[in-house]
Amino acid sequence: MTGLKIKTVSLLAAAAAVVAAVIAFNPWRGSGSAQAELAAEASQAASCRLSAGQTAAFRFSSTVTAEGQSDTFEGVMSWQVEALNAGVARVRASFSKVNLSQDMTLAAERAESPQGLPFFLQVDSNCAISGTAFAPQWQPKSRLLVATQLDNFTFLLPQAGATQWQSAALDGLGDYTANFSVLNQAPLQIQRQKTDHLIRGAADSFGIKISVQKSQATAMFNPAQPLWWQAISGEEIMSLQVAGQPEVIMQQRFSLQRDDQLFAAIPQTDWALAEKSVPYDLAPEFDEFITQQQSYTETYTAFVSAITDSPPRYFDAALEMAAWLKKHPEDVDLLVAELRGQMTDDARPTAFLALQLSGLNNAREALSDMVFDTTMSQGDQSRAASALADVGTPSQDVAELLLSRSMIKDLAGNASLLGAGSMVARSEDPVLRQYIMQSLQQQLVGAADQSERLILIDSMGNTGDAAFVDVLSTELSAQSTATRRRAADAISRLPAEQARPALLDALVLESDPQVSTALIDALKHAGATSPELVDVLEKRINSSDANQRAATIDLLGSQQTERAQQLLIAQYKRETDAQLKMQIGRYVPARALR
Image (cartoon, rainbow, N blue to C red):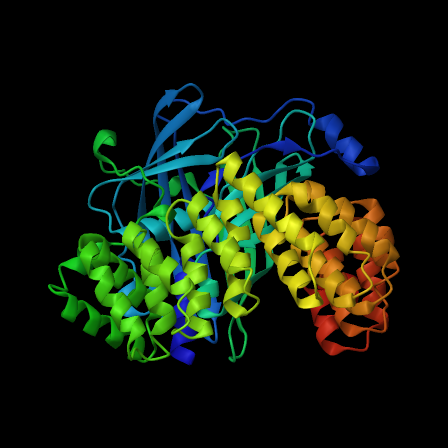
């Protein structure tokens, strides 16, 4: 298993910090005298003052570690402003003095050194990197590596008068909220924290549970110079767990320091010829796969071989098979025949994922048939339902099929119901969204037993639609503790602004420690911060239940207020659990705990 864990970690390390797009920008209201003082100093909005020809250089370092192994990327990055257009600067850049070690990453996944290769950045007036473009000679994995580092270093400057603000964003794991706060004005110092992470992608298909335990970084800007970065440091901690295997903790630490004396001349390259797609969103390298497999038989042999490798290469196998199917849609039937035949249990989930990733209409038709095929196992019918919900663009006929299958109360029916909910989150069609949501609500009203109710609550959470906040809030007062726990988790997956008040109101009244823990975890997931929340957590921090104390410590640690820090310090002095004392140490400086 060690090899598989390292493989999984290496793939996620490349994606974990990528901010693909900033969706919204909304200021928070500050509170307290310290915030008022900062607001007075921030009466004018900071901005990047860039002009054509400006240059800068930065020393940078990033190290990802897991299970005693590490990947390191460090060197010097040189920038030169090439053009300005409507407040957006086009910056030409390159790396020098690069040290790239990839001990944790398997050979097939390693990036080539970007030493000397030119690329472009688009930098907004708020100093955020809004786009990248790479010269044609860049390898895709190297582009992803560099884009990841650049996004580690991306901060949004505050609007006029703001001391706290946030933006909805997307990284390699999924949607999250980037929370920013001003720590100091002279020089300008900003802290960024990621919360409210909604993990997406293929992780669930392989039973991989991913959670972001910490994501915090601090940047300093010098108003005396053009407002480029001056210094940045940060840390991210993520846990990964494959079903039945020990948890893997992955830590990334990164830093940047401006040092213009290190500037190195940047090779010329043509902006018009540069690749401008988001590296994180790059399609699989299908052409590379296809040239290696010339027939379906060879493709399937390679598929099985990848799964039986040590460590297994499940996702590679799915991508390569999906690549083949895209080029040869008629071969969908051949893979389906394998699934209906003697395919090994290890390979079956990966084959369903390949059908999903292909996005083909005939793959959708085959999955639709398998959802109702009683000659197949419940596990395979469930996998077909999950893949069907995620293949291609959500459609009315697929929604109707899944909701129809959900009327059969078995494992595949449950998977169909969960899949129908997830289609709402993927669809932009208001008619389709409304159809599914009304169906879920009607089923909840008529739910005959507890297990059916729990699945419906999960499915509503999967929709990600704020319309279900009120419905699920009612479930937070249900008699069943299992229902209340499940409702807390489901609400945390809905829009945070609407979810937070419902979760906090429920926590005030909750007496069961397991449900309280679920509510606290949900509030942390929703990025909750307020003096009222700290009031409630003060009553939970010394709970006799260790799990509730652990959850409370994490949520207090994310508050970044003096009062929250004092509560953690007080708990440290009376805490008897060594693991929880270490947990408090993540959020409080060691000198404060002495």
